[in-house]
Structure formats: structure tokens, C-alpha cells
Length: 335
Image 1 (cartoon, rainbow, N blue to C red):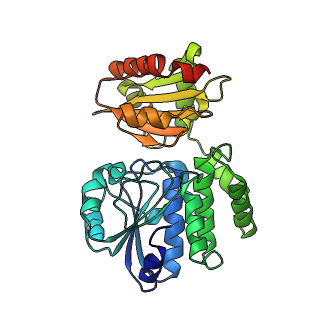
Image 2 (tube, one colour):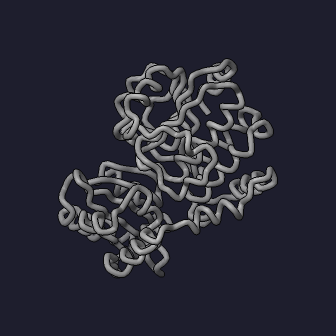
């Protein structure tokens, strides 16, 4: 970690601290933010957690989630919090543009900034940084941060409970991005009293009927298999959003379902929004969807999990993606 000693000194006295994460927050964004917040509260800091947009409802069971401010709903209050903060933690993102509607207010803040993240190609906004792309999740890095602070034994149980949510969701239930170190970490938090089975049940078995129907529709009616290049694509348009009343979090995990098909190496979920088209990529092996997103769709992320966007219309975006896959990436997809 860079500038750790400086940060450690800053944390010795009570501060106004803001914990922020990216727009459309997932389990790792929320889990890492709450895990850090629960620990910082024990040090006597005044801590606020702000998410740019609403969170998926399947995360509602997490301790402390009711205290998170939502910028798009409470903009004036959130701006006041940012203005009066001494220290900003940027969690699970490496560029302020990932916060979308919060980008300007965060970038303009004079507060000391700390980035904790595991995505590729970070920007240089942070005064201190804990960054490792080999980490399974930002929650794994929060554990590392606590270890650096010699605070693992001082952190409350809620820190480890929310930490496990992020690890579980960002690894697809400990299926990918795992390592021996991660499994030792999970064993440690289990020994600290975290109810692993309860959290797994809350994360995996709390779908609404609407979300379950949407998953079935996406597979049966909207999935196109490009078997000659080992790729599957699901496309949802504005009418699909209207028909299913799709809310934030309802699409969580749908793109991963495509990878359950034998021989599929690349999976893409393309969704039409009011002002843009969003693309969510997943892949297997060494096929880099991060490269596709960063080069062609104004995005990025990880080798096997990335996101991007297009200002073209939905048919144009789909056609462009297919052309890229066939002309630029076919050899890699079938090798």
C-alpha cells in the first residue's frame, strides 16, 4: 500500500470520513463500504457512506445498509457531506467517472483521498492507494487493510459479515477469482463467528418472483448463441425494461448464466437504457473482455468481468459487437 504510514497517522484522530463506491453498486461495492465503515466507527470517526445510485434489494439484510445515503435521491445532503469531509475512501472503483453523477463533486473535493480497489488501470487521483488486480474483490483488500492496521482482532463481527457478502458475490459463490489465500481468509472470518451458511442463503436464495421470471425470459427468449465463436449474447430493450419493471439489481448475475453453457467462452448482456446502451461482459480462461471494453466501449474492469457502454442505438451496438468478435477476436475465442 502506498502512503500507508501517512494514512495511519491521519486515522489516529477522529475525522469526518466519507466512504464512496461506484454507480449501480453490487455486493462488493456495498460490502466493502459497510465493512470499512463498521471498523472506522470503532475508532471514533464520523463516517458517512454514499452510493451514487440505489442498491439491489437482495442486499437489504446486510447490517448497516439502512444508514447508506443515496446520492441520486438525497443530492443536496450528500453534497454537504462531501464538502465537510476530511478523508474520502474510494472503494471498488479506480476512476471518479465510475461514480457517474458523483464524479464532479468527488473530483473537486480537497479531502485526502484513499483508493482501495482491484480493477485494472487505476487513475492517479488518490493520495494513498491499496490496489491489487489479483484480489478476488475489494472486500478481500479491506481484510488486507485491516491486517496492515493490526486491527483484525479489534474489528466488529459486522465488518466480517459484510466483507463476506462482497467476496461471495464477486467470486460467483467462490467459483472464480479464488486463491489459497482467499480460502484461508474465508476460514478465518468463519472462525470469527460469521454465519457463512446464512449469508450464502440470503445472497443466493432471495430472488423476487419478478426477477426469477426475468431470468427465464432472458434465457428462453433473448439469448442468441454464436456457437462458431463460443459466445452467447442476451439483449434486453426498453420494452423489456418496461414489461418487467426492471429495477437496479434485477439484472445481477444474468450474464453469468450464459457461461454455464458448455464451450461458451464469452458472455454478453446488452441492455437498452434511455440515453445509452450498457454492455456487461464475462469470459472464461485468458480471454480478455477488459480489452474489448476499454478499447471499444468506454469501459473496463477485469480480465474476465468488465462493463462498457455505447452511444449508438441498440441494433447498431449489437451489430458492432458481433463484427468485432468475428473480425478481431474469433481466433482467441475458438483456440
